[in-house]
Length: 251
Image (tube, rainbow, N blue to C red; front, side):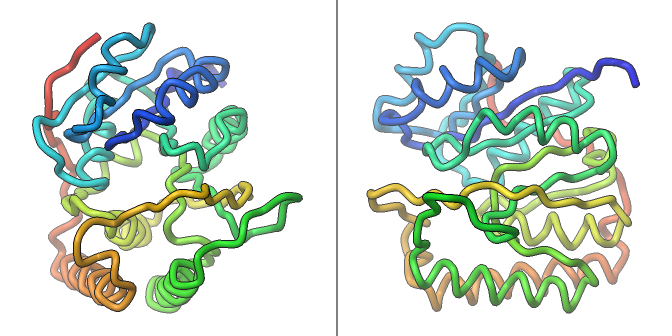
């Protein structure tokens, strides 16, 4: 197989404490890096301006995790990449695993990290509400879509760009992976999981506003899942997505 053009994309919102260290590691494993700054207000934007050898797209305001990933997907299509790897910028993912994801993407449309596929030495103990919700939503996805996932929400993924063209993602928030799984299942995409360590940092992380309440968050996930399945049933998600960038490109 020919050498493929691979982009590593990092959605970023208020990660001034981590972004430089993460990018320094990512550079060891990826020649092409995109940072989507989703309206950061903590100095991340200024820090990124001094980072070499990256492309940057900035949202003028915070639009959400899903919106940042949609921008990354659009950039990858626009620039003619074959594979896009997504990795979070909060220090919970290990950039040295990027080549494994790229290699697995030679035989799959979506390669998804799983923190629960197997144990690693030194794994963190996840917050109980997050693990419970992940387990519940993953089981429901498997039951309703005929999938065999073990981790519905891991942000460490590799996507074949041609496969992304078959989807029409519209969800802007943290429930975007649920819409993705629904559309991927409907399109018959090839999905594999790769085990990754379970790392939670000793700092507070927010889903934003009301979603920090576990019951509200679970209700939101169910709403998006039901809505996405209903949309597929109506045949709305069979058209290729040709979205445009949600910000300006800065080299």
